[in-house]
Image 1 (cartoon, rainbow, N blue to C red):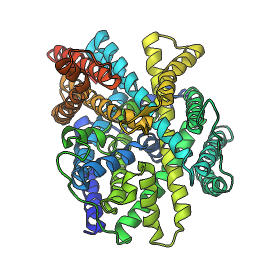
Image 2 (cartoon, rainbow, N blue to C red; image 1 turned 45 degrees about the horizontal axis):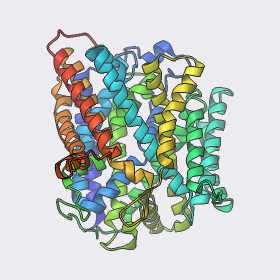
Image 3 (cartoon, rainbow, N blue to C red; image 1 turned 30 degrees about the vertical axis):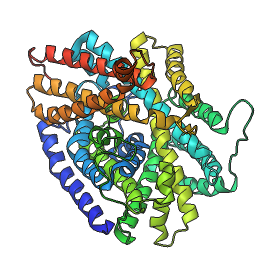
Length: 555
């Protein structure tokens, strides 16, 4: 089957959804372009900065569209076939993920641009606030752990890894220079774009000519050294003002996403590629993984993601210049991420079962697939591979520093440490656990080393989707108490709660199996974390049901 009709159908569905359901949501939430937003009221030049919607969309899109919509669909398609993944990406993005992102964004704007955790405090009280803070902080820790290891893994690949590492560092330097040019020297955005975009492309060429190759030592592997470098970057990037790096780097990263999307569209529409991988492999994968519920926690960011709600309410809402921009940035941004997931899925669809690539890492499958697409129109595949791998790490950079900044916010809220040293302490503590996790070396049953991101991906996906469900629950409480149609968020909330709690129960299996068969407690770390997350979610649901009957509020 040709990829063309599949891609065309998805794009048309997303366009119809944006102009119909997105507009419907905007009316139900009462978007008012004349209402002054927190970004305009505070405008402190650090966190609260009114930003043009197109610029903000690029930054927001870069922050949310990291490795999640690439890795998740690829893994799920390899396990279950591409058809169930495709159906969840389309239906999930339109009715679950985009609703979650849009409602999180406008909900934050209506609550003084406070994060979703502060909204929880207003509606669920101090106890619910504490539970949610801990849950979100842990979820962000898993994000940082998984994505740090994915990035360092791409830097040590034998063929292009060193070049990608060089290009990545040059890209970050260019982001800083662009930020200084825009905000200190008042360079027009158009001129800055004309100057810095070609320089980013030049950095790809330079990276391949001057790759950074870290030799192995008796104490640390090259990947462990890169993990330390990346976490050090997170430390710095999370405490400096957003205009220095986060905004310009996100803007430049947005172009990476757009160009990568264009590459994918070329392949899907003009490449003449066919779907040769099996559409459906069964309700249980070859490794014994059940489609229900693992499909819905593996394909995390491509269909729905709790991390998006944290970004929407943590950084993006502080930059919304007009309420009307929430539809483009929130709802539209999620649909664009759905397209990223579709393109990632297509790189599996063009494989044949048994192909050697099916055992490769997701970033390599993604790079090989996209380079094959653009090779159909004459672009050298070697350059395309390097570009796609740099784009892949760029997406992760954007999520890494945003996730660290948000983890810092939350830890400061938990401890009350809000001065400079409080920021430093909060950031260091938030990075300590990921540093320990990525330094561990886990082996499978055959004695092969398992990457840290693989060890933590399932718990990351589940906690991420559970965070989305809990965010939708808080939004539902707000909508109900405000007299607005709360079913908009309540219906996806119920589904996401069901899938994620079911997944957590499956992860607890090593512990209850140990009790049932041997009468001993098996100290499985993932199972212990699953129990802790399950209890936190249950306690939050109890707090939500307690406050629903109370009188309405005005927001």
